[in-house]
Length: 110
Length: 116
Picture 1 (tube, one colour):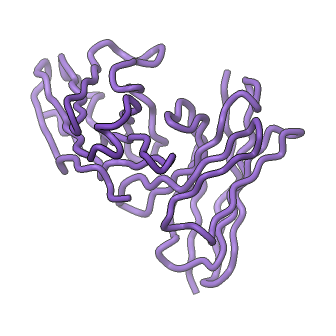
Picture 2: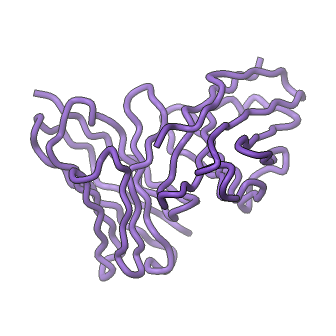
């Protein structure tokens, strides 16, 4: 199972919006509404930010939103804040009943 | 509150085995699966496998098939991940997490170093 494709890095200024893409295939992202997004700060465990493509766990800011079109899922962060600077990973359920992660995207808040 | 507490760091020689534990609390253990994810130094997340704490069913990443085993002890609400025939590229932080398709709570991570 190949990793999902994410941009290595994205950046934005405080207050702006950014979008991180996550491209897979019809056997994972495109075939199921089971895409999740995780935020990871250096030296910390990942934190679930979005699940089932569009849903936010309790306590996650509504500045984070998810969507999907075909084989590509996206995470949008609006009103960028300094504390949003972190690595972001997408994941998807697959047709083999496994999970595959993206390679990760480093978000820099300028 | 949901907590997953993992065992401490390990140093192993190539060819050895390691077993990492993950003790869950704050929820009904058998109502959720447990996933295992690892992260090599400076690298991304890699899914290793999962287990249903309800019936013990497992599924593993093809890359690790035959070398990894995930088990649970429902009497102590603890999950275990054993990795055998360790190689230097198995050096990583190993995480357990609650859930299968989505992981909503994570352990603190266990550093496993494989070095001769």
